[in-house]
Image (cartoon, rainbow, N blue to C red; front, side, top):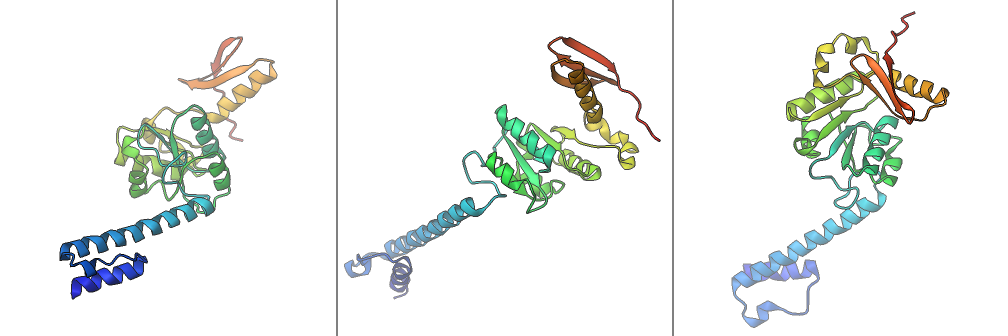
Length: 240
């Protein structure tokens, strides 16, 4: 019969034995349920083996669980796995803030470092809304676009705000003329001159201070050190 044949063939594929329900006048539904359960076991076995192989040989994808698993909520989405993105991810992990990194290049140079730091990495374009949905942007606390291309970072933030309008955004940008001409986009957050912050930190260190943090606020750059808080205006850039 059809049910007996289905049950017998499934037993053969699943290498289940030696019991044979057909020899005990088992009802048809029992044969069907038993065959389906055996097929389910085959599927889970294949998924387990595939997951173990991926976990062993992969250096660029997130794990199903554990430290490299995708965070569920209240995490930070980091776009770009360059030096800035890698260090931000490492610092977030040090302060126990879950994060996930989105990198466009499948063989990026910092992927082994990200894996050793137990950072979950998703290969894809962070400007793609499907990728943002995959990393749970609607449940995230912030997204940081830290790629080396200014316009790509702007595209990531625009897509992020279109997907989750209430998410906090951090945008890395340089002195690209296209970025300077689109200052209306900077309503997405506060603009901080990282070069000025770096210069203030270095100058404070040269003066013998022990800087703790450098910050920018309303056209001023400040350095908080053990000796106190000092501020000064951000000097104009040389255009020569």
